[in-house]
Amino acid sequence: MLHVPQLVWTALAVGQSLVWFFALPPLFKPYWEGLWGGLAPLTQQLVLNQLVVLYFIAAAILMIPIYAGNMPFFEQFKISSKVWAWRSAKKQERDDFWALTRRSLTLFAINVCCIVPVLTALKYFIMSKFTADMSFTTDDWPSYPTLFAHNVALTLVHEFGFYWCHRLAHHPNLYTYHKVHHDYQQNTILASQHEHPIDYIVTIATPALLALAIINPHSFTLFHWMAWLIVANIDDHVGYAFPWSPVRWFWFAASTDQHEFHHSKNMGCFASKLGVFDWWFESERPYLAWRAKRERGDTAWKPK
Image 1 (cartoon, helix red, strand yellow):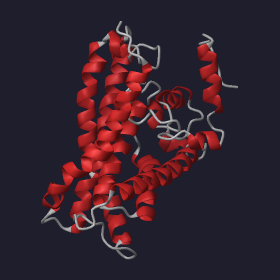
Image 2 (cartoon, one colour; image 1 turned 45 degrees about the horizontal axis):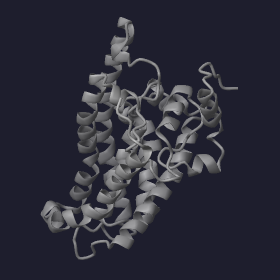
Image 3 (tube, helix red, strand yellow; image 1 turned 45 degrees about the vertical axis):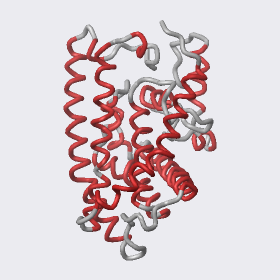
Image 4 (tube, helix red, strand yellow; image 1 turned 135 degrees about the horizontal axis):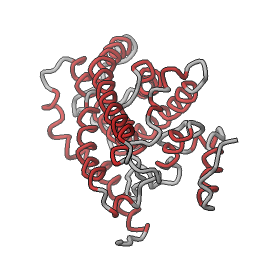
């Protein structure tokens, strides 16, 4: 099997991040106003927030051949040693997978077609009482320093909100809705969109709305940040720890296998994109113990 030094993968990951940060602004700026011209302010935000559909479809198109191909090059990065459900020798496991797939697509459709538009409208009407409408012009196009500052601020606020909303969702009295997301104990890309609508509001929408309410970014900044956020969420759930991932190369990023551990063991690792809050609030300890056992070859580890 082809051996590629980690330094090469890191350089590839950094290169993707640099393209995202430096190339997208000048690429989109000449067309930005034309893309949104003629749309009412609320419609602009409704359309912008529906880009999650395009990101998910694009990621699925990339991942389906990897899942189906069983190619050694990609399988070396698979996190779990358990065989994929659709390849199981047990018919019941295969049937359960396809039933779960249909349920995931149904939940995805409900959330993006119903929950996202309603919450976008509520956010628009509430925010319009306190701040100016989100800008869709290039007159106040964000500079690179502003883009960087707002991306960092959005990420920190969102991740802090996500950490605590997610941790709260695991409380025994509230776990009924978040339990649906844990139908996936071995993640595939479908798990990234497998959310009960109430859980979607609590753990997905609330942290994002909190970040937007505090920062109130330019529309392009939101588009720019959403690209990183959605890619990171999908990367959390693909079931592979790809070393070229553009959202995992910096030192305080959470690792993909942390979230895989969270799904398989249903404990700890409540953060998603950044590891700093799990470290700060010491909720990564079960994962660190599991990883240490795994590195020693002890696959029979059980949580205390």
